[in-house]
Image (cartoon, rainbow, N blue to C red; front, side, top):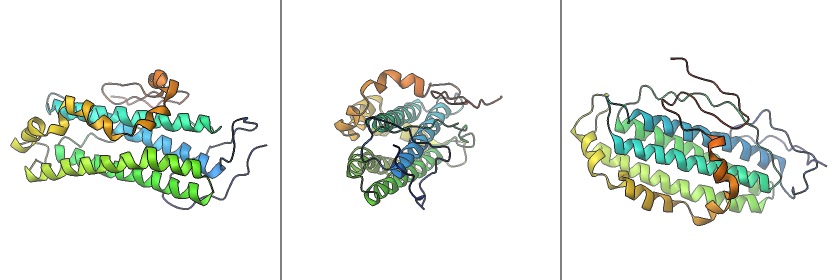
Length: 252
């Protein structure tokens, strides 16, 4: 018998209007409907963040911008967020929950062509997603779901806090070097590209991946093999493919 739908939680947590509970799940136990719906909505928000970061990475790879280290940085962050979404999907499956695929709109990143603006956008997006996780954590506590609360706090909130600190530091250095904001670029943009150690590929692989605690990867399981079914890397970033999700394509 399906658990009754709880009263809607008021707050900034995104809604999942078409969410439905899976009746007769044999593995479902003490998994409140409100928490399941919140997890479903936050998963979509993380996918949107991944898509936006991928779009930023493509912008810095264009010939008229030509900041390849920033491109690799944002592309890597997009891959990390995709793995976070996979971990959320895996957790939903383990608890007997159900994910509702939705359409992801193309991110409006065309006006962004400078380091400062890109970092500001990334910082705002990570803060927003972190706030969703924090509200989802509070919702789990409110609905007496300690397992979800512990998982959300340790595996998703703590890594996001470290990521916000990293982007904040990069933005501080960009302002210190007086990076451009008008899209024309200057010496500050070039120095950030060449000197900022966090942007180096070996530092990204060796250091930024360690920001995610090891237990996070335990939720991935076989989901890693299905990564391409969740999001397909595209260039330019106008299309995105999500399993069982209708696609909206940009018409150039």
